[in-house]
Amino acid sequence: MRALARTCGAIVVALAWAGQPATAQDPTAGNAQGQLSVTIYNGGQALVQDIRQIAFRTGRSRQEFPDVSAQIRPQTVSFAADGTAIVEQNFDYDLLSPNALMQKAVGETVTLLRTNVATGAETRERAKVLAVNGGVVLQIGPRIEVLRDDGMPVRVIFDKIPTNLRAKPTLSITVDSQRAGTRPATLSYLTGGLGWSADYVSLYDEKTGTVDVQGWVTLNNSTGTTFDEARTLLVAGTPSGQAANSRYRPTPPGNIRRAGTETAPREQLGDYYLYPLAERTTIANAQTKQVSFLDVSGVPAQKIYEYSVAGFDTMTEPRSAASVIKFNTSAKGGGLGDALPAGTVRFYQRDLRGDPQFIGENSIGHTPMGSELGLATGEAFDVKVQSTVVKRERMSPRIWRTSMSYLLTNARAQPVTIDLVQRGLDWYWDDTRIITESQKSERLDSDGTKWRVAMPANGEVTITATFETRY
Image (cartoon, rainbow, N blue to C red; front, side, top):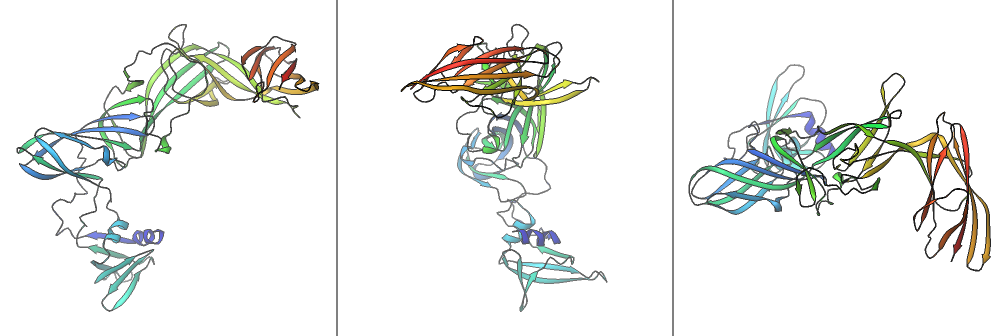
């Protein structure tokens, strides 16, 4: 195929249009779509509804619908027109190209037009295409010749376009109409290659403890087709059956510290929220388009540091805590006041010159209104944690005691807060309890406990604890 592509790239393809079947598509024709409505889901799937004015004749006729998605799912096609019934449908996706045209010409006769570079003289020869397997093999009279990629100007002139090659992805439907006349016909189908996600630009102000958030809908179209002036509706949710399109896998849920219980002021479709675009829009093929849907300023936010110790181990060196920004999506108390579709949140912060600089990003899943989010933006340069097993002793055949020490250091010129979490308290059938601790912790679940530590500027704090594990 690579050799064929190089060969076809070295020739100029010409067509003699005489003898073109009446049902073939004109490559120069404009967009044949009608009134479009497109519903796009997070999983890379979309529902297209296209209302076109069709001239029907009485009885059976074949109606062709060019400019459908090249990734159409033919088994999902629905056609509706007053006084008509579907007899058969076909999707022709073998598109017209130099490679496809040459491959379809095997066994056919074409004309070779060669140009002498020195004199400009042209010579024509009739040739039969014998094979297209890594190159083009021709029979010219009694001799066999390979169409070479030698830089010599050669034009291959075809007598016609094969009936099974289309200039555009085309759906053909055979219908049985009760009466003749022009009337609207609605074509609906599901397609892959058309998806959306949410992207959030967040400007964090550490001095005021606030964040400004802009939400953008990002549309991606790789269907091979442009959808002109479409009424566009976005569905925040992933209906079953979309996992097959791995390119548009939705962002996995995560980073919700507490799920909200407030209902967002948006239209719902079953268990999904709808985000309609305000105006009709053109979604061009191979295009990424962004549309704003959220713009909120001065949302209360807090930056803290977090570190989780996976088990009872001694660290050979201090490790960086994660820098985490927390805020909420509630409509009360100055939150974002909206449900957030899954996407990526990118954080910026102004430097001393007032210029916003990128400080990190993280992902969120579909987040109900009223939720508390905690998004890690990266690892802290100046805030470190080091755990040490001070002592481990066996108290009885079924009881072990482990004494731990945690050294927390802060090289920043400002006080900070660190959430230190000890995990591994519930391994299989183990039951681990805290016997002593230098600072009261908060038990998170059966597997972990948390100390919230107030760190002084340019200082350090040591937390100690003794754990008893029963097997």
